[in-house]
Image (cartoon, rainbow, N blue to C red; front, side):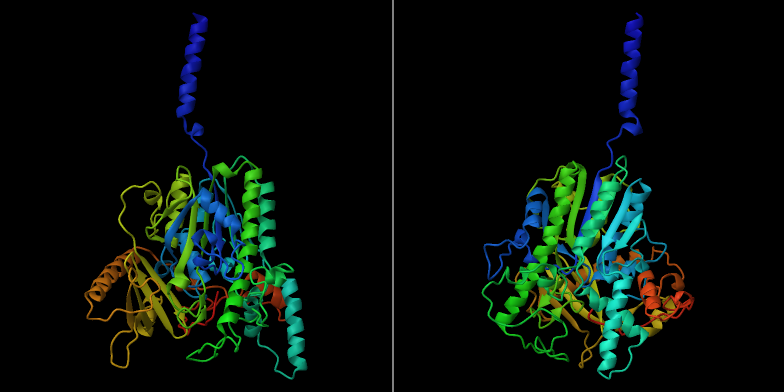
Length: 547
């Protein structure tokens, strides 16, 4: 009888334990990898083979990952430059609604990020970034236990700048201003080598973390961004994807090289087709270098037995243009070469190697990762979990709002599965001042018509033939764009805003302050904000190019 009673108690205890919250399945780890300036169509998983070395895969590790994950064939960024795209990635909001569209804005303290929700759920959080526009002064460190730059240290950067100032002085040029010196951080990032330091930080974190807690690890790789200098990454890498090249064109100073294109409008192309092909091979080589570092992280997770219980997302923030629409670089338009992005997800239960043609948005990623992690969603997010697509459930088609500032204007747009729209806006100073946020109005042609272009993505996937206004598809697309825009504006009105002074970016990051002090420019800590406590809203023009 006594044994029977003990057995009954043990059975009851086991049932209670299995149903108790403590016995719930543990949260999975989350790994988010963002690739800066990576054109979707340069990856083998999306069909790319290098033109001059077709037997050598550019992205073997990402391609292998694609075989283990779900690949989205129709994924889009909100913009064509780093800062707002990554903010959409982290907040689940369109650029209009997170409002970090230009670099004098930081994320509103009232907004919540993916990292914050994961941290609140008990995750250890760490991020290692390698481009200046992911600095914590923009709000990216929010929710991270560790948020660390892999870029050149302030001390090394100060040494580089000192050498540059001396060369400039010897050449009889005037001494640089403080603004010019601070701007060098952006230029240096174009040839800095950062992927090894990103991996170093990631591996240190994986080795030292608390193994009793799940982790959220974010890795940002910048080395594929122009300038295209693979020889600085690894000796011999320059010729890997173009071994027979006989020319002398190099990838240095790509955006500003007058031998590539005119430096003033209309920016006529000067580079030959063969030299351009060589530059693309240099770009492939840098992608190959980044891919190798991603592969090392994947292998480490597998080696440590973490792979099976880790959600993994690989995504780019934007692409680059190589004269598809007459320009190079990015932060200019919203065409497919700039805003069509690779997106791959490894999540539980998804069919390995499957491909999804439905439209996905960069601001759907945070909601998706939180959904699969079993963590509360971002309440303010516009993005939606991609889980219905992954599980074959019925789900309405989606569309995406896009926007990019450049020079005095802003180009915004929208796209769905059939149509794409771009239009040119200009700042409305009166409305902007009245609302303490950037407001725009259409820019008009000489004939007084709004500057707007409508494309049929099905018949014109490269978006080179705008529809005439008398085409019924034009009116249909504009009507759908208007509905999506008004829906987003309605959502915007539900988002409370902090005072403007709390939404302006500090004038200098901590790294920049350290660098300036080492260069002898004194203590800037008392003058570290764009507008101090001023309520004055900075209004364009917005500098280009950017990251």
